[in-house]
Image (cartoon, rainbow, N blue to C red):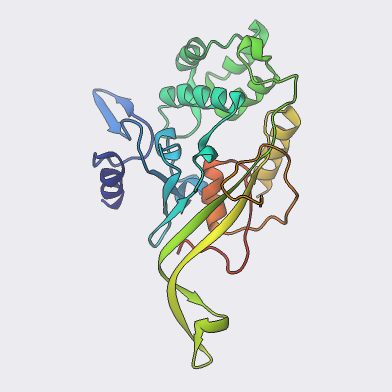
Length: 276
């Protein structure tokens, strides 16, 4: 019921799911998701745990503001610069392909589709694989997104793939803010009263985010291996140039951020941003 209420506030309809559109279950039955673009988005810790799949409507809202769901309550992630939402040519291409793939995914976000649906994806996105590669992808009877994406990284852009011989894709760097309006323990400085009893207060945290390019085969394979094993002077400016390297920090919020910007590296000063 909570998700229906959140969706009602975000998109105007009390639908129970967070994926895009409808999912046809056959037999005249379907599941309802987010019907169209929204102004404020939604991210959830559950997606980082592979318990759901948030669609592009909620991940890419009109304004760079996201409600963040956790196991206890909701917080807010936002950016002052709307350019954090902008994508370069290949990112736009990936979004189009992913949306076409998800439209054929009847597994509830499992990341695989039938051969018939795959053929429709290829038509919708103007992708032309060599016949031998196409046979390899369809051989098992289902097409898994990770295998499809790996094949796209090896397919030239002129054939609808993601291989970029220019190598011009840069690293994104931007600043976002996280606001937790519910009480959070502050254990240092003025946060203590009587020496040992922490007070509680709302908190806002500034995060510097760096998103590496992911358009090469080596980058993709490194991402797969990593997954299986486990600021600028003007804050309003989005930089596509390689930023100064900073130590990468981790918190559950970072897992949520990575559902929107895969492999994002985050850093902050002071207390760890809390979503609980």
